[in-house]
Image (tube, rainbow, N blue to C red):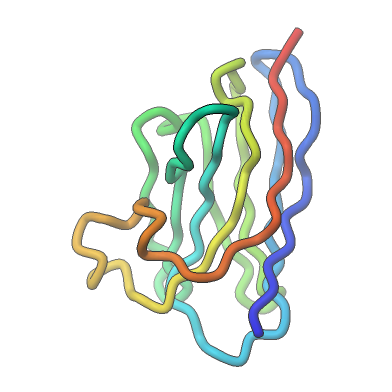
Amino acid sequence: QVQLVESGGGLVQPGGSLRLSCSVYGVTLDYYVIAWFRQAPGKEREGVSCISKSDGSTNYDDSVKGRFTISRDNAKKTVYLQMNTLKPEDTAVYYCATSGVSIKTMNGLELSRYNYDHWGQGTQVTVSS
């Protein structure tokens, strides 16, 4: 049974920063990729960024490129999302998820939620003055 636990969310002013963490517990089945998704009220869940467990290759949605950075610590089984220059439109519940499929196999669909099978409960990020 895989359990993912997100932390680090909160309220921040526009232009501020937050760092989210996703810790993986109880892994009995290996995974290849961990991703961050977000879902704002009334909107679809969208992919933000992902990182390969093996070689650390990354992918970002255009809306966060240059502002967000994903990283991993395999020894701690933790993935981080450093979010800088936050905007009100970044407000959402942020989820991490794992996939048993490699980035190469995803073939351009690395940020599609349909490629991910284990999900955390989410952490709220609110960007507001």
